[in-house]
Amino acid sequence: MSQFTFKMPDLGEGTVDAEIVAWHTKPGDVVSEDQLIVEVMTDKAAVEVPAPVSGRVVSVTGAPGDKIAVGSPLIVFELTDGAAAAPAAATPAATVPAAKPAATPAPAATATPAKTTAPSMASMPAAAAAPATAARQGRVMTSPANRRRAREAGIDLTTVAGSGPGGRIVRADLQTAAPRQAVAHAADTTEIKVIGLRRLIAERMSEAKRNIPHFAYVEEVDVTELESLRMHLNHSRAKDAGSLSYLPLVVMALTRVLESFPQCNVLYDAARGVLIRHRAVHVGIATQTPDGLKVPVVRNAQALGLWEVAAEIRRLAERARANKATREELVGSTITVTSLGKLGGIASTPIINAPEVAIIGLNKAVERPVVYQGTVAVRRIMNLSSSFDHRFVDGYDAAAMIQALKERLEHPATIFIPTVKSP
Image (cartoon, rainbow, N blue to C red; front, side, top):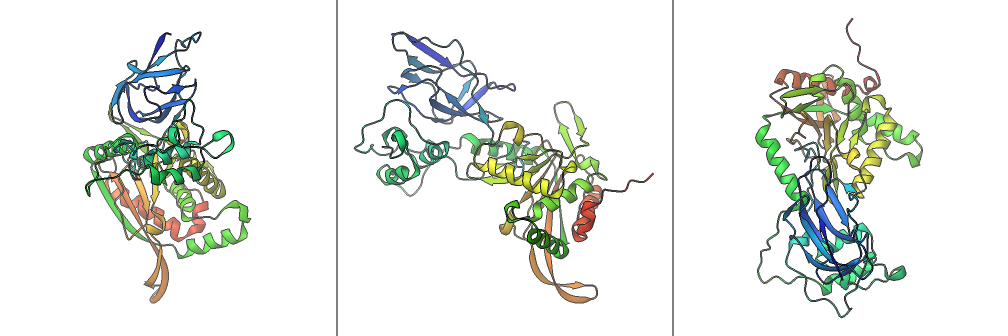
């Protein structure tokens, strides 16, 4: 029998190394060609790497959290008689989290979103002894979502008996296996290695906060009329069109406002010391997902209608949460909007999604008594929390932009009227 050494593939876009997130095989396992063997994380994307050949695993390089250089040995296979090693495996398909954040963010630390859920349990102590079920040989059949659940729970899928068609592992099988494979901890503390998307988020958050002088500006907005319009549109729209939230209305208003404040629709290329001003508005939507915070991008939002913006936000959020968003759907935003929804609080200080220079945050809308037209009235109030890169956006311009956005939101008919430019 011959051996074949599979090296870390070139994952594109100048990648020089990749971090091991989770191994899906171990020495002694017999794998089939195209079977998932390892998940890795680059600075741009999470990538599932399949086996380039069929054979028995002789050795693997690296543990979760280790970085392996492109071109370095990753895994060694012992080939069965007659099997030939592929000269080069195809480049694996990539799915970004993370967003990549998302502003970087959390909303924001880089152009690729970031993740806020608990780190993967793949780096925790090994699971207890396998159940009586004999270890499965060859390909484990289950969905990507179940692979993630198993990894986070510390379950070895090769020891789980599948009850689905053809022995496929379904979610119920994991729920049965979890108690048997629970990890017993002798102490009250647990060490969790920071790897994968959680590590990427931490690095980008720190980089953005360290390198960008953030200027925060919070303004109170009366969204009573906006809420009335939103409710009217929801009642007049077909039920299958989906419920309209504030987010599409804010995105629409923002695209109008940026016509007068192009200095806020800018990317900063630090390597060249150049500001890149964009005419098109590509709005990043900070989205919480089971895999962490991601920032899918509504491209050319200025050219879309309200329902088109709403549908695109919904489509991108669903793809991001299902871990199906492509790299192209998760990069390239020129300004980011983030919302904590009903948990929005009074105010927040979002971190800029570098290389952007501005991020707008929506806080919780609440009804409260205010002085309105000379009398006390109950109005629906929401704060806009924004952050700007003070190197390139002056405080006056930042405040003026938010005031213009406030005016559009308080008089929602103006959201649908393009800015009139002076002759």
